[in-house]
Image (cartoon, rainbow, N blue to C red; front, side):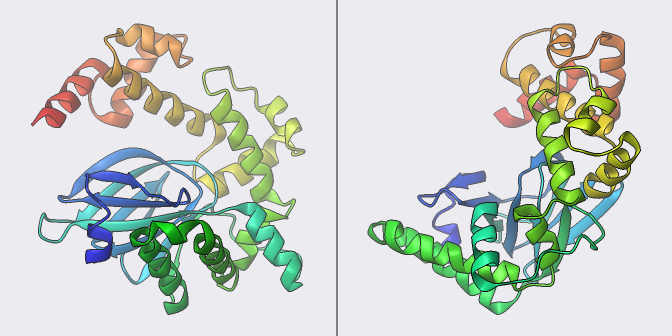
Length: 289
């Protein structure tokens, strides 16, 4: 614990000298924070967290790791955290190129597209994987060793992940041409163009799927439809804009792609619980305490 506490000087995310490794610290419970989870492996060292994606809920602690294979809008809650025992988490960005190289080098079979399709899953945290994470952490205390030893440990961590029961799902990210990789392509397009009109037929064609197949597999992967995914991205960007400047709610609505300010207000309240301006004022007040 002390190893990680020593490198988490601020609340929230802490970057490290190893770009793929991020550390998170919270000294009190966090309720229903809207976030976008990036493709990564999340290992809790102390505390417990709940993540809700669509209608699905996942809870994980020190005995498990959470893995995310595509960018997912989610609601995260830190359940167990105090100033004396803060929530501590290590996050490793997974490199599809490293996974692909290891699959080829080890002669593993082609990935099978027979998993449930979900882009988020919880697995048991085995000792070899945890040991690799801790050795990567210790390198932060000897920065002169990072450039030589970090790539070796990162490679080992990717190898350990491929040895898990999630091999098929991970391999699909790296070299597969199945539904997970195609939905990932659709998600990348929506993220890049979230303020533009979403034309499902054109999006489906761009990832070599029929509209019905895209809708079905997208919902299996992301626990929401493409339209719901775009809506969450728009609303989270709107919230960020409202907090960062003095633009009106109507101006922000149009900037993130809404044609109707009243529709924007309704959907904002549905997701965040309060009208846009009131929500921004509440969050500013909470941050200044």
